Image (tube, rainbow, N blue to C red; front, side):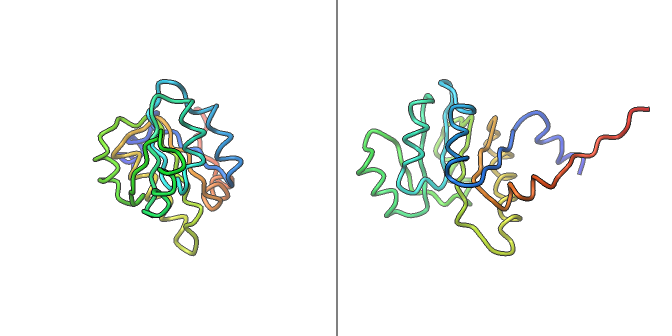
Length: 155
């Protein structure tokens, strides 16, 4: 466990949001002009268009070819790709040094949704090593709100 904690210590910040409003409110706070941003689960590209003016480059991705086709038609000036968000290797093959990752996985629900979300975040943090991952997941935000990191009393 100690080795795993060292992987993330001081490197990737995880920001859990609930709902579209909170997810989008993070953009001016977390995205800056030097960032290269990957958005996973962009659907039709609306949030991607909000991220684009704030950063150096953004790539919007979604598992649905239909959604990506519509995003490309609607916003031809932006970069969109079909990508399964759980295929971290495919994200790595995009060949960009992503400094921020936005993940909209609000469609994942059910008993294992929290475990799937944590596994996904861990995979992206380990492989792509971004400064921050902003995730839209009410299950994660609800869980994180009940977590308190233990700090040993000083001797």
